Image (cartoon, rainbow, N blue to C red):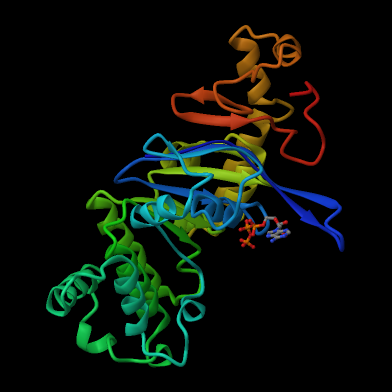
Amino acid sequence: MLTIEALDKVYKTGTFGTSDLHAVRQVSLDVQRGEVVSLIGESGSGKSTIGKMVLHLLDSTGGSITFDGRDVTRLGFRARRDYYRKVQGVFQDPFSSFNPIFKVDRTFETLRRSYFPRVSGAAWREKLEEALGAVSLEPGDTLGKFPHQLSGGQLQRLLIARALLLDIELLVADEIISMLDASTRIDVLNLLGELKGRGLGILFVTHDLSLGNYVSDRVVILYKGRVVERGATAAVFDDPLHPYTRDLLASVPHLDRTWEEVEAEESARSARLAGRCLYHEALAAQGRALGDEVAAGNTPADDVGLVEHAPGHFVGCFRKAADEECPAGV
Ligand SMILES: Nc1ncnc2c1ncn2[C@@H]1O[C@H](COP(=O)(O)OP(=O)(O)OP(=O)(O)O)[C@@H](O)[C@H]1O
């Protein structure tokens, strides 16, 4: 459904826009129907920039984004409208998505005017109640209220309901639960699970590894704008290969294990992987001469800058992720 290939974003910064900030580098990933893919990385790793490019809120600098095979990086007005019927985003702060001086209903009315001008009042009401039901909200509890009269979780559900009114196929969920309290978080996560069960594809943007683990089928680990590892959630979480992924995982508290157990496991893994770069080893095993491939202008991997270390489990160069260049020049 959604395919991103070698996506790049350079922001112009500085007073006169003379400096470049390379926020997203050669990122490739895909999201299929009925699948949750988590984009995980620390603050500043480029997650939101990718989400915004998918939502056409930002232009990319290079690479491609296709939806069902159609390039969506350059859309005209009408094509953009059609795209937004299928792809919608929900963001971190639900309060800032509503105008505090209007009742929440206004958000739905705006949508109705833009997309459903010919739908009768009764039919619209039915459709709205159905969408609210899908996110477990009672119309009587939420409609007719001002944003400050509702909780963050209720507002976030209203935004998801708004997206559902368009029969979307892909939801970009950017840190949508970071501002919610623990019990509401689980409700919203479970809701995402239900929506996925109904065939929705979800690109779930988070800095929180445990959330990524909870909801997603596949994870993409991002570091300084670059994908360093990606694969099935269980594969990446059970056998993290890239040092950055391992650092991220080691920093998550485990309720079921003592700190000593986690440390022992991590030092055994570090010893196993010490001094090795699985990226280069895998390429060597595939009999590829890195230098020759690069000189020929080829991408020396199955994916941009990644090798498939195990089926579906991709890893990048261990050193390129840091600011230093890859010693093999890839
Ligand atoms: N409009 C902009 N102009 C210039 N630089 C930007 C702009 N937006 C983001 N950046 C920079 O691009 C990099 C990636 O930012 P981005 O917001 O995508 O990261 P993120 O992983 O989503 O972080 P967070 O989790 O904190 O939102 C950061 O260094 C950020 O400062």
